[in-house]
Length: 424
RNA sequence: GGAAGUGUGGCCGAGUGGUUUAAGGCACUGGUCUUGAAAACCAGCGAGGGUUUAUCCCCUCCGUGAGUUCGAAUCUCACCGCUUCCGCCA
Image 1 (cartoon, rainbow, N blue to C red):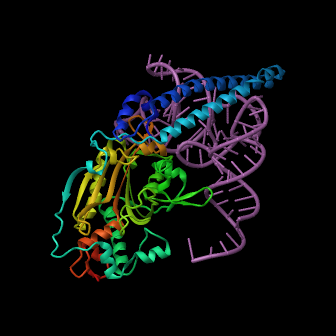
Image 2 (tube, rainbow, N blue to C red):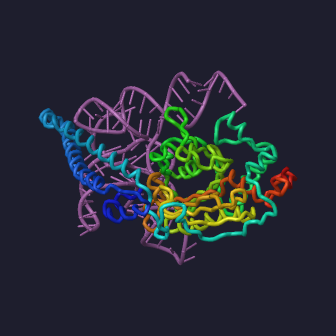
Image 3 (cartoon, rainbow, N blue to C red):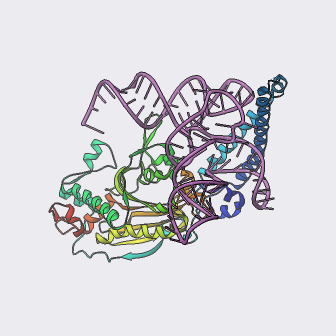
């Protein structure tokens, strides 16, 4: 959520900033609601003030044993007026809140203009893609030949966009997650965290998935409803909801391995083959809660932590700065890491690292105590995949395959594989 | 799932209809004292919002939401969390 005071005082600037995302802020509607709010709030508060002072007089009169009937008579119609005014104020504030909840974050100044993926800016590449002396297979083919990846079984058990794995391939996926957790906890200073895989609506509102993106979520039929987490970002970032964090604890750095569930309602027809886009996948997530003046540096650091996973796995990748049109609703600036997939002859997203600045924090009421002012102020929140485990599995399979379809285990994963050096 | 208890500021905790403007303590901040620190003493110290150059002033907030009342932390109802006991269970 944007700062309402910013929108009030800099309405035109906010409008033109949001236009970079092709988001049209209804400034007329906002200005109209805002002036109504101002007027009704002032009236309501003066009525409340009068009620309070009159009630106090009644109390005092009663304490002295005086007759309070005349005073009570004066209050007669007063209560109704106040109630009507309070109801109207409540209505206006709800409307303003609804409007505000649907407005995306303002982008950082260095986010490039652009409409789509095609306008994203490549920042750097790491490692030349391997030259194969044979036609490299994609992970679907490789998995089938190994007899360890079965999509048909998953269709029977659940439906489309699920997968089953068996044997060493399962272990490889587990090894990848373990390796990532060890790297981030031991070398990068993150605290390992375990969280619920279902969350309430308040949590999703806090991180920005609700109210706008309910269609992307799986909802559980409970009362009140739970939602399967689309990313560990939701439960982990909500750890600081309604909290005031002491300055000396910042930055908070959490790493969390969870399954993620996405209904991907809007994306049917895209990436229908293989494990690229699934309803359920594993991810190791990095979350940082930072003081505002540190968040840009934290964003660079967090992104480099995700990159380190790819470097140690010796997987070719590039870092891309997302353009205005491709940056997510809540984010002020996002880097994507894209890994080289020989089976597709393309770089594909394997991590997305975002700085949300105070956008989520305002929704979450996540604050820190600024030692300079002594006052609670909003923190900045950041997160990034470190990495998507399922896609890392694919990348390892495709980049480490040999001519006969066997998978060599990357050196850094060998300690987790119980002596297996080659799968197949 | 059943029963009983309980929910108050960063933390502990008093408060059963009217100067509650939420006592008191801890923590924190500033000051006095001290070579320095501690202790002691003095003072300050919740959050959000409105108005304002600023101060002032005003409103809201005692788990959440409804309700009763001129007036609610306090009374009523529902829901949620926690504690204890019983039942069930990996």
